[in-house]
Image: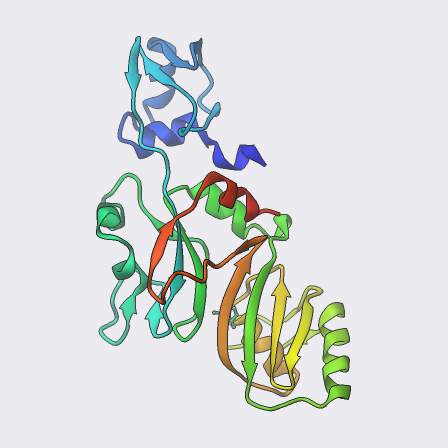
Amino acid sequence: MEGIFKERLDTVFIRRGISTHRRVRRLLQKHNVCVNGSRILESGFRVNLASDAISIDGIKKNLAPDIYIMMNKKAGTICSTKDDGLYKTVYSFIPQKYFDYTNENSLQKIHTVGRLDTDTEGLLIFTTNGDFSHSLANPLFHVKKTYYVELEKSESEEKRKFLKEKFSEGFFIPAEKNEKEFISRPAILEWNRASSCRLTITEGKFHQVKRMFCAQGNRVVFLKRISIGSLALDEKLEAGDSRELSSEELSLLFK
Ligand code: URA
């Protein structure tokens, strides 16, 4: 799992403006690039910028480590970099010291790991590490995402039991707009009351939670992501607030 927090040396050099795609191999052949004192010739060598010492021709390079932020997304905000004039973007809520990373031309560009709908609240992760966000979103990793859900209609005890079973098996979800139909993966449904529950899924299709309940004849009226993997949303964060994640918290995302 430690490998997920590492990045390829060529990606690091390109994203930090030290080299370009075309030149990175030549840089490694012609110059003495060392990681923790050992000469590296392979552009795919993986480094952890938080702990590995990198030097070029004996000069130590202080390369900024990647950024990982947890936000409690506010309802009524969009996970897009462009303001649509109607809703504020989630990027306008990140602390000002990271604003440079939102710039289109920034070499270390910050982005959200997946998206939440405009009306969805809760746990949203931002990072500058593309490998990390791909791994977290990769269906092969089966990363769990848990949502607190409120429904329009109350369900009888019998129907709640039926739905719990149905969600644990997976079922047909019809197409929506340009999104294809699919069979949901087994999910864990835990009822709190007749019209509210927690749902844990391991995939992230467009409007997934809403479509799952809609396919079963109900409607989601409130949705909040409360955890990813074993990392819970920090309830001390007010809506719209964010803070950096520790490396222990990062590894919880994959557990
Ligand atoms: N499922 C949804 O329907 N919406 C979200 O924002 C996240 C999961």
